[in-house]
Image (cartoon, rainbow, N blue to C red):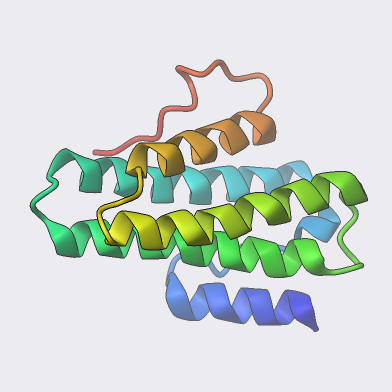
Length: 140
């Protein structure tokens, strides 16, 4: 039931991301989808950073990032999620920090680079065979 809610949320919020699956069925396909989603939202954050005068683009990017992390938090909170409990707790803590930092960025007191760095580090965890340079999202 929670998995369906997450999928519905992502379908409504991000028209191309309905394929997102619950981390409770952690397959390489799911990890690839999660990686691609984080790469796309991180690319949007990088683009928003490039033009600090475009407030709309910055707010849209940080809110999209927050929404992705909120959906991940719902999934991580499910007892059906098969990730180790300690890892789930750590990732939930990261998602809560993301939420707080999002509001700080919108108030010009936060650091969009910190959001980008967190996403890149998670991307490296999803694709451990990559180097830090490989975890650079395509922002074209």
